[in-house]
Image 1 (spheres, rainbow, N blue to C red):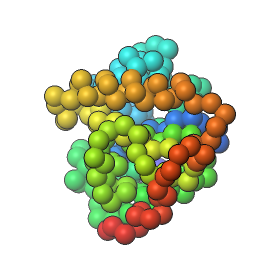
Image 2: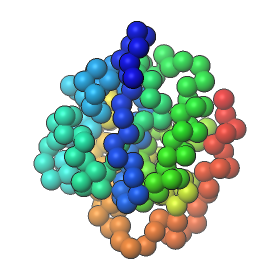
Image 3: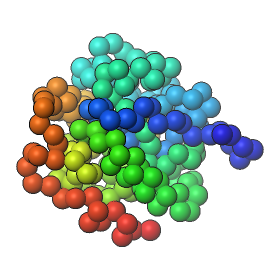
Image 4: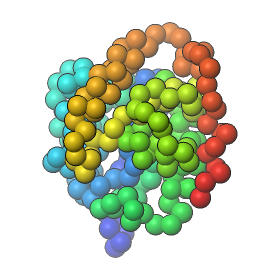
Length: 197
């Protein structure tokens, strides 16, 4: 629902049981909220990186985002409030977003959760990721990954983005019948989630 304060947020793209990978962004950009599709800014590298890494069979346009669940991929945001910059989010929005996101991910149990940006990961867990790639934390049974933000605001990171998406795609293709929670040691999400403001 949209009110006079600005465009509404984006719908979760079929966060349902059976998804293999869910990308978590920070919050919708204003262009994305206006057109109703994820990563719709002209200079965002998200769909290009999906294709180049082999996560999708062709280069998607933002308008095709609703078909991503057909490839086992879902999209959501940490916070649903659209802004021009993340720093403009209303007070308390991130706390509400963390709780809501955790509930959705625990319910739908994707095999992997990938935070699109180290800042998104930090805002969710309350501490920074040392490097992009796989993390020790789990959200329920879901393995956690981080890739450098695909936003054009983060210049000079294309080589790092490409390498991170290729590594993610390899892990994605290697997923088999083993559930994420059965693989290796992990740190449960509840240990740090609600200790930050």
